[in-house]
Image 1 (cartoon, rainbow, N blue to C red):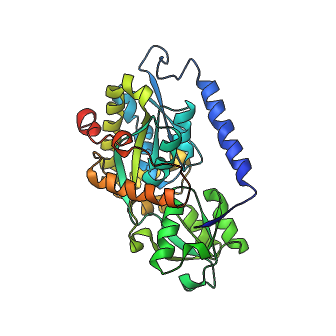
Image 2: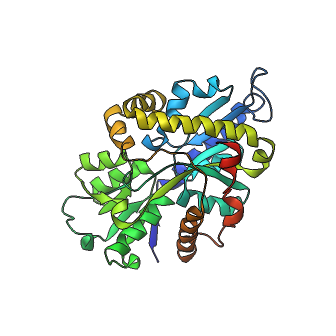
Image 3: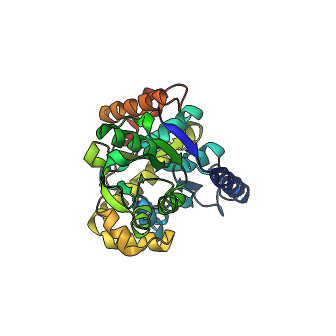
Length: 328
């Protein structure tokens, strides 16, 4: 089993995330509630998401007014990333969220009302391995930094792929923005992350050592919603997903425009974002039996690591027929 060590700054980051969610809920009460209206128009729907290139379709849709043109009132709620997006839905601060499969599944244990509506992107190249200067072989690794969910799962797979017993490696968990600094200080020997944190790690003296696809890991990004809200708003959620699907096509067609939108919406660097977008397959689709199989493998890992007490009911939380019914 991994030996986990949380950095001393994590409680502060967790508190900041909680305060953000509470403030968003308080500020939105009565004005941006999906059960109400904003100025008598379409109900406002908040989508919680992280801040990196993988969310380019949502940034592009917001920047170009695509939701508004479809008669929708959608607000993007930017959070720390990782589980914070799904936690925003659980807290009632958002109605939908964008989360990777391995990040969403543990949240579905804590909130069994969370539902995955469909996938809007996937990649085996976007997440990369960064090792510090002097580490030329995975066998030299003694410590690794990791974010929760996808990062931890990918780290586990990386070590096993290279014949390293994960029990022999100390995993220091932290927020994405903390990890390149941990590498620079020499607190960790490497990490697996996405840009801009990959580029920051390289700038801090690290070097690239491959992508997650090199050792058989491919993540899938889902759109999530709470079942209680979804029950009354399935057509609305379907319209939102249709806009995301169209934005997927535009991102694929014009990565530079997507990068510009990401810069305007999330202050991401244009050149690095355009490069990262080219490493992701942006395509909206229904969930399949292959998604269930992959999710079961991830859930088994989480159980083995004692990160969850029980697996979510995959036949319930993964809505395999939903996308074709409401979003095509």
